[in-house]
Amino acid sequence: MRPLSRQLVAVLGRGVVPAAEPIATADDLGLVRGDGCFDAMRLLGGGTQAVAEHLDEHLERFAHSAATLELPFDEPGWRALIAEAANAWAPAPEAVLKLVLTRGTEAAPHRPSGFLTVTELNLAAMRRARAGIRVRLLARGYASDAFADAPWLLGGVKLLSYAVNSAAKRAAEASGDDDALFVSSDGYALEGPTSAVIVLRDGRLTTTPTGDTGILDSVTTRQVFARAAGVGVPTEHALIAATDLFSADGVWLASSIRGVCPVLTLDGRTLRRDPGWNAKLAGWGGF
Image (tube, rainbow, N blue to C red; front, side):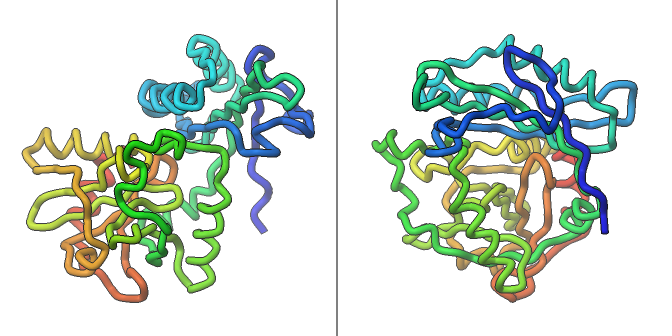
């Protein structure tokens, strides 16, 4: 059995604390209501100090989530805490750096609580996923434009309330697959529980747009599309009919931690895949 991953914990305003030390109370609104946001990125080792990958982009997204929730965001404080954690972390090849911000406690909701964790990644599991995954289409229960003119639905926010995403992953695994891809009630591919979808057709890369769909802006997809455009590969943000995935030239699920993973099967049906394109997207994403 693989030993438990190493972990580091640091609290905003306090710094690094013992990993087993309690840092939240029973009435923290992030725990009892999921009222808060988070973001996550890789912490890469290999040198004398670990480095947070695409830190500026992730902090920008984290700040957007906080602003949408009307939570104050102390960017200098977060940068200092991340630097302290990176300096204290014994470099491993890859780790997950997770930033968490809650509204605070029921007694003091005006005092948000922030902390981060660094957790060593299971590289064997990452290598398997990056070689290819099996995906199950699951209904998301709303239309592709459900978030238009409805800011209270908190579209594009990386919320702490991830129960639906976790349930979707379990449902996919119960069907013998590795991951899920949500489909809108009007038949469009949205996103995975923790990933964005990228589709190749006739030499063009497409991903689902943010905004009315409510999906999260993907830092990894942004990196892939920027690199692709730099070498002349056309890209677009457009709605993708779920039925069109089966005839695409390639389908990937992209995330900041796992990477750009080719979809081998969708609902048990084998999809087209090209090792050359797999290598291109992985490289463009930095994996």
